[in-house]
Image: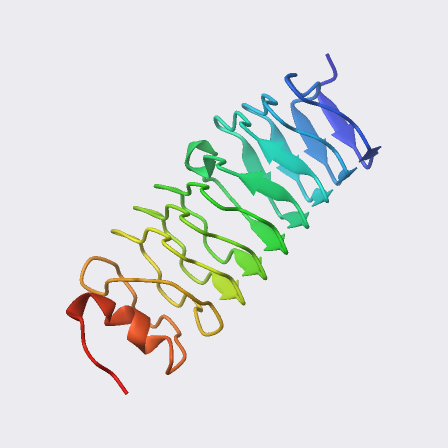
Length: 189
């Protein structure tokens, strides 16, 4: 088994139901790859790009994502909470991430742009400095979430209770303030 893969491009590869062959991927690009039921446990991705890939039922135990970019990926129901938090750094652009979980994960300064994040679980996560640019957060769960300086100004359909989350210096648009007050059943006009 290869220990490392450097500067490689993997295009139209089917990794379904397999264990990834390397333990570390450095500056690799994955294009149109299928990772359905793939075991990515204890694998490190450093400065990698995933473009138009499919992820489903992926094993992410102690997986490390450092400076990784996901673009146009389908990532339904992944449990990122099992990932290695050390230096976790990712950018998600135009990804469908419905039903994923980031529960308990330290994921500071993560960028979500134009993503569907319906029913995503951020319970106990540290999303300090993260940005939710034009993201749909319908029924996303925020409970005991640390969201210092997180930017929700262009996010939509979120419900965040300021009493059970740490929102110090978080950014919201004026219209987003209604979503913060939703539990009080106020009539705001």
